Length: 318
Image 1 (cartoon, rainbow, N blue to C red):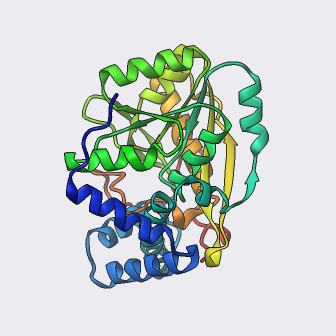
Image 2: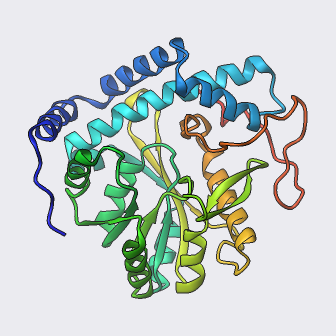
């Protein structure tokens, strides 16, 4: 599809991105951290949502610990926003030089060798835009995206994400049909598995023990095309040292014909990723729009009755 004309505000914004992209990573992340701390101090929407989400998830932790973790999450959200601007502005070559480690690559290589379609489930965790760049250097990639609420921004997004041969597919009827065809032909597709589904397009499934609206699209794609599902994310390393990519296998049942079982497996896969870099998850995203905060000390359980771990020293590190 031909790119839409870019108007002058978009052109100006793109030029600004290039300026940010020219900076070293460490000061970019430091600036993002300042913005995150400012957002925390102002007690805005991101802080309120993070506090509410973590009150649902970290029920075994004290109120003081939850506050501390929530603050770290808001600061990491600031870093995430700044790094995305730098990744887009600096281009794929510069971004890919910042990948210093890849863990679990065998899961990705095995999926490629299987000869079937590959579904990359990439949660809102770490730097997902960098992950897209890396995947596109391995084999042709299509990503499903939801157009921004401001239509004038879409040409910019398509431009910065199109620096490598990535097919960008809108999350709409014709786009979903294109995904089925690509996967059936053995192609690779990237999807954000924790994207809030539209009304009527999801089911409630446990996420850290709390029922959350969960997309049915990814499990249905896996079931109907036989595609291999691999979870992946790019972890932001301390002090601007670069990024570590992680690949993880999908939990059993993610392609089950029972939608509720498949969506529960999907959320377990997201949890497996989040536990490796807990504060880098987008806890400022309203994942549970209608949930009630549980009393402190009440156990969280998953969909099959297993008590979930709450916190942990590794996941709560700075």
